[in-house]
Image (cartoon, rainbow, N blue to C red; front, side, top):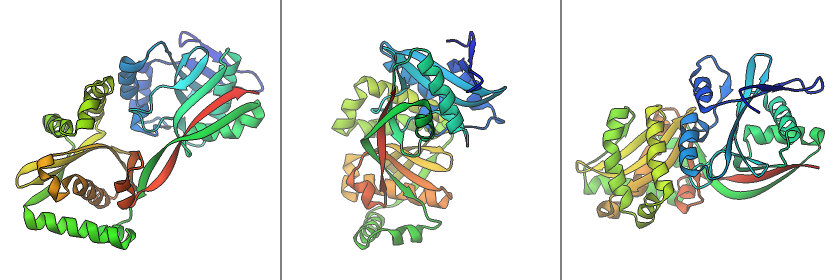
Length: 337
């Protein structure tokens, strides 16, 4: 299988599957005229490439496109090991995984892709980090009976997200009475004790200049400092910097009395804010700056007319208190009957 050559389906399943490269994926991602839907930062070529450099192990990269005529209707960022296929990525650093598929083409894409894989000697697909609305999962469910596939999915994690209203007051009204009171009380207390402002950093040069500040606060949390000392920490630095260069990563900063007291690192993608990580100065913890930075980030997202605030994976209590609701994350295994 190679982009050195493409495999053409049968009359029953007319399709063409081609082996792609990271370079060709970058061209697809940068093509303004493409109908391909990139569902999350975690499937962009820069993220895949950085993940691969740090975690590939014994796996072989298997980037496949499915075409109808000359049109690419989907791309599968796969890797294969011991005749088992999985999506490139891992739950430790990738919250959501999926394929890149033209809207409305999930069934056709899944049918062609699975027919090709199983006829090529693949024994199973082990897929992780799938939302229930993942395009690949929807396509697989639709064509599994026709292709005589067994699909088994179990919940492996939970994510939290918040559908954003049009105004800040509507957001507050949507919280329960106790949490609404707590948010207002903490903001009032912060204002009475200090002079503060919240601002966001989008420009890459300014973003890069603030990164060391964020990392210093980040390291003051013992658990996060340990994370930075691991391979995941090396990946984290590179991947988020690449996301910033691509115009997708932002910092939200809560400044207290002229100094950064807390910050959120988020992705701005398809009108959704994805809260990827956060940090705060322990010296200011008595003013709840870590929590309030997230609150003010939500307020800014509402002001910017974002549709959703995604807290990403993890069921921490604060996410629920700030209005998030649980979204199950699945791992699925697909085999031939």
